[in-house]
Length: 370
Image 1 (cartoon, rainbow, N blue to C red):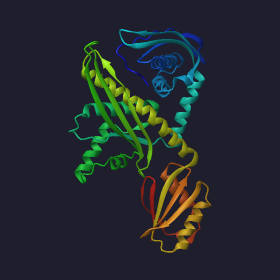
Image 2: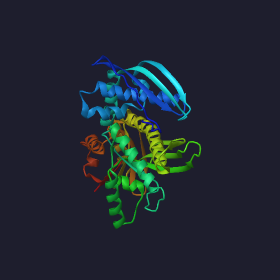
Image 3: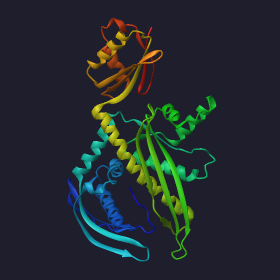
Image 4: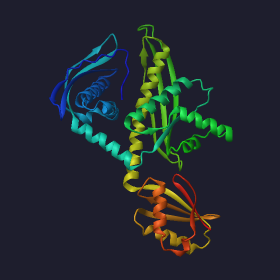
């Protein structure tokens, strides 16, 4: 993730070590603390390394850069701090480093993210403000935060729902029922996951000593599974005090961008961990069968799934008013593959010869026996 400062200067002297494996970079970073400046320098070194190492793949360069610069130390070797000092005029630390950037480490990590997203069927993600009314006094800055998050997700390889598409869905839903629930909007957009965005801003005003305008933003994100409402991650990040010599609006803009990127970086890690659990253990589904009144038939269904390849863990069965409910775990994140596996498991069982699909909605699959 990139930090935005009042003064942004990058000193670079790339020295090729091996065009196929690594490159040595010199970069300078800035920050309010020595640690922030060092992290900034590391990110810039990785960005430069990506540009040099992947110049033969220009179309993929920005994608690769977006996926790896949030954790630069994973790709740097032989790091050496060549200069560090505090600038009393800008009130910022300046740190210069030399480090080797590894191509193999970059390719391995980028490939791992892509592979994981493929394994969970690249689910769509909808990002939306918790307060999306046109009367929202922070609507402009909230839209900035949402767009910043979407851009970050896109660079990592996630598929997100565009804001124009969300607007069209909301208009259609309002004309039918007036419902504007975020979960319903996500389901209507075929997005298995959604992230809510809550923005707060503190205008610090102009500092009479420096002449700069300052602001501090706080971004709270919560990620949910649209199909069962369970939480998959949460993040709360602040920009701290950031400034602009231009005006207050620019300071607000910088603060929102910085806090949004920090929060997205934090919640993406949690979402990927959730995706990894799904890829390793399978996805959780709820199966309902209408038309069963006999407990033994319901238990036969449970046993058939238990003995079939792909269903893992315990299957929980319960009786509701007009259906039997089964909570299962299946190896695939695709509901259509769950349905296929269920019919395969029931092959040759006469009690389920008249079983048909009643409806499907993501991880909730309804059957009925006529």
